Each structure stands twice: as C-alpha cells, then as structure tokens.
Length: 353
Image 1 (cartoon, rainbow, N blue to C red):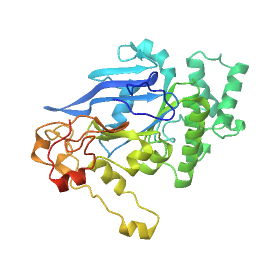
Image 2 (cartoon, rainbow, N blue to C red):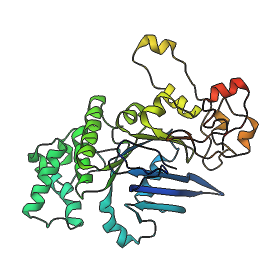
Image 3 (cartoon, helix red, strand yellow):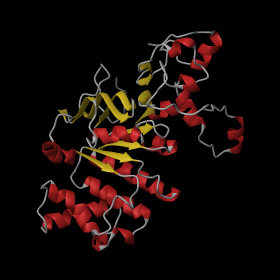
C-alpha cells in the first residue's frame, strides 16, 4: 500500500523504490487494567526522500504514538520499521544510539524541549559531537553551528545566548537546527507549530518547506491544523482510533475526500469567504470517539458514520485503492463506486474490500 508523490520515485507496482521510512503492520498496545489500549493497530506506510507526509486525526487517534514508535522511543508489540532499508526494530540500544542520526524529531513545545541551562551553541553542537561528526571546540564544529543557525534564519551571534532570551518562533528554529545537526534522512515534526502565534506558524512552515527542498530530507508532519498540513504535505494520511482510514495526494484528499471521517475533519475548517461559508455543505461528526481499549467491532468509525449499515459492524475494512494513488478503508465504496453519498442514494450496500 503506497501512494504517489511528485518527490518520490515509484515503480509500476506503486511501491517506493527507495523509501526513507517504511513501516509495516506496526502495532503498539498499552496495558490498561484488563484491556489493552490499541494506540497503533496494524499501520503500514512509506515516506520517500524529499517527501512530506502529513499525519492528521483527532486527539487520541495514535499520531504521536506512531511517531515515537518510528523513533524507537517506545517499543512496538509487533511490526517492522525500516529506515533507509535497514530494520531498526531489532537493533540494540547501543546500535540504535548511533543509528538515530538518520531520524530526528522536532518537538511540539520549543520552550520545554530546549535545556534552559545550555547555550544555543551547546544545544546545536551536542548531536554533532555525539555522532562524531566534528570534534568538540574545533573549527569545523564552530562552522557547522554557524551554518545551521543561518540555515534556519537566525544570526550566528545568537549562539552565545540562552533559550529564554528568544521568542517562541526563534526557539522552534533552534529546535529545527538541532534536528538538522546530524544530517538526518528524515525528521518527524510532532505538532511543531501548535504552540506558536499564527504569523510565526507561517514562517516555520515556509522554513521547513525550504529546508526539505534544499536538502532532500523527508518529513513526517503531524498536526491538528489541517490547513497547515494541506500547505506543506505531498500526501496526507488520516488516522482514526489507531488505524489509517485514508491516504493519498494532499490536493486530492482535500478536494475529493473519500471517507466520511475525512469529510468531517475538512468540513470543520472555516472558510474565510462568508458567502461560500453560508452555502457550502457541512459534514458534522456525531458523538464521541470510542475508547481505544474497547473499539467497535467491524469498522471503527461506524458508530459515528451516517452511512453505516449492518455489514459495517461485522467486517473491518482494509485500505484499498479507490482512485489512482488514493486509498480508503470503507466497505461502501470501491474503484467503480467511489462516492459514498451516491451509493447511499442508489441503495448500494457493502461493496468495498
């Protein structure tokens, strides 16, 4: 299961020839009394070199857990994680320590993710020294720190200041410079703009976009801000209750969403034109998200879906290619009948895989 992107090289099978990150059948369960919380439940996806994959979904759907599992900050129950073709789920802690230079993270809160007792110079140089890319107090290290600060739009003279001397946007730029320091193949950005003012959010998005174009670095961009995800992403993956329910090219997912859940998320976005806002059709998500410790049988979204039928409670849908490079997990749609509303009007029952 893979989708195309303008920045990736895919063969006739649709699979990436050289994925930077490849996750297959990943499961992460947490013990919660008598039950297991299925935070991530059998997810498979790929990210190619220079590609941005946006990951969206409501709070508690498992986005951050998926990110931490990809970084091996938590141990998955099962599944495969490959970075640049190398299986990392079996690496020891010692092996993984050296391997981490290939995958880095930008945290949500720049205030708490930077050590207030360290100068900016030390924060950025620490991963360079740890991964033995330059010797401590060497000219190469000084030059690397200076170049990294310039690359994120900060003056090199800021290197001798402490994090509390900067604004939130400047601190996030420092966090991005730290993530870039070991020259990774992929960066996971977990809600990197949610703690920032709107004007600063745009600056950080433009910075990430520029950096990935210049360096060819891959990016997993996790956010609740669907406008930001649409702007920066080549493809978008939509998560619900630990599963992927839709994944495809960014513009197509936003203009022609297949899943009722995706339609509801996009419909919740305000439109700046009052006339368009009044006339547009709204899809209101009903009810609350079920507990991941006790998900509904069959389709996990069926308890909130206006198109659900009895068959939806009996079979769990799998991701199927409904349109070229556009996948969805729904029993009521397929390639011949991709519009769930039209299928409802025609009285079509379960037709998907």
